Image (cartoon, rainbow, N blue to C red; front, side, top):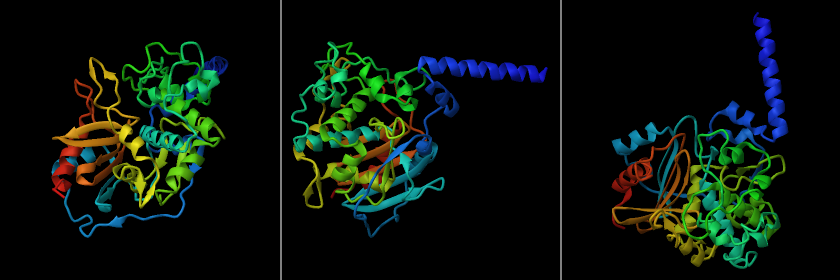
Length: 380
């Protein structure tokens, strides 16, 4: 009897695999096996290296790690299974701590913090004239995307998350578009199938497809892979200490531009420093101040029934007690927070993030901001 059931099970699995294969949905199996995205997914996918150049190590403050974290901050960091926490102020590391065998060189998944990196690369390509205008249509770079519905979508609208495309960012469903984007092996095919269903340039609607399309535009505009361009124009100029890795959809394929840039807290903090200093890195203008200012200002679109106040060009915006904050964020609580008035950057990496309240606001964000401000928010 046991042998009969085993044969039935094997038969069902073979039939299921065949159905998924012929339907083009073989990625369902990978999604089922690995169940949920993880900060250590690096080895699940093919990757491309974002090469570092000559490292420029951070300065270390004289009071490095001398301040005790507040009980509330430590509770939150441990509750959400943090693996790295780093505070940089006045261009020096003032605090860092690691958990679960992570250290200063451990690579961790950025998830959607990669969107902010793509925004930077778009800005640099625009500065260089490789992208002539942010108001060019995506179709000018991606002819396969140019259906009658899609021909009006602009690069700026993709940056602002206002493309109006039919892409669902639901993370809990096996059949959702974002699950396919993460596990499938042909991102270009998926993106070229998308269609505009609401008027572009009007309303904020967060979707990873917008960033992936920006990635394809970068490839076309620069003639290079996203990783190669990122290495040359960003990672090396800002003195990253370690190579980064970027997940691909398949071997020698395209980068998952919307996510999956693997680096460490110290090097992620460099992204914050670059924008804190208006695109300047140690005397060199890596990206124009004009683009930085636009990227961290509210995009001129609506957010529901109100004007948008929370999003720029692939950067999140908020404030704490009147202190402006901009930040990159990922789905499991990956954050690069920047508080310009305090010359303060802090990075948090980990396995979980806070739930959302009734207004859709993440509950962990105000905790991190309030507690870090208690420690490092003194007047400068």
